[in-house]
Length: 223
Image 1 (cartoon, rainbow, N blue to C red):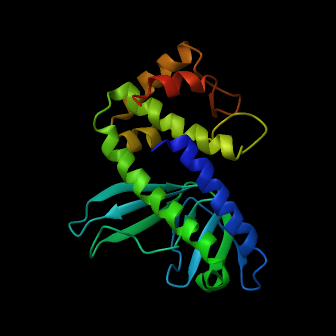
Image 2 (cartoon, rainbow, N blue to C red):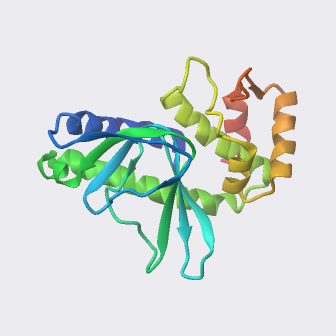
């Protein structure tokens, strides 16, 4: 799956649904002050994120917590149940303030069937994409893992700049990258330092990560 093209298509599909849902009388804006635990009512609502980032953690029956998914601008939580796990628990954690639309699932009843099918298909692909990405990363070396994750992050930024620069949110830290790549923070810091020396990345005055050469990351991420 070409993740760059896929996220462009996902953004289009979710934007169409967002525009449609915003005219629904029962749709409400929501704001959640974080970082904290996010407890959405997924039986009745879908949550479309406008700003902020939410991590989903999967907690097994034995109590093991694993990073499971990453949601940000135009991502939707709650269109369908968590999949491929039984009798397990999922925990949503915000990385800062989060805002968006709280959309009753009943809104889908009047959504055009063809558009609804595409909405479900693309968002199911998104859930599977992250799990597939984790599996793919097993075959990458340390540098390729970091390049691959940064490429994905850049695509989110490219779709929706958080400010007027090309920077990432400040909460995209070495610690977050190490969790996603399942490597130590020290090793991530080494790779990031080398990228900075090569002028592939830099940091602005606010300490935010800025990717200056996305082509280098795309060409060297192992795909």
